[in-house]
Image (cartoon, rainbow, N blue to C red; front, side):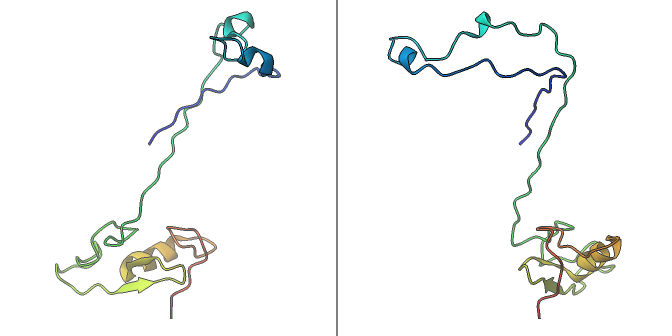
Length: 122
């Protein structure tokens, strides 16, 4: 899902007010026509905004996205046993994936899925 927004460099107070009396008039929405307001003719600039969302699948590692029944990318031999670990937040990863993730964190060890402090589930 990608969303785009346009940001204008100059903003003014919104001139729109809702008129309850106009709502009763057939064919009227109660809102003034846009053509009756002076709008800028040129857009000074725009900023694109994208959102990304990955829906977690319980069958795949959230870091390498490989199935849990397969080895993680760090396992050298296919079919190598790659143990799974759970955090207190209930997210599950290959042990090699989460260890690499935690070593890459500069200050706090956070879960890559929910950003809570990572603690191994006992």
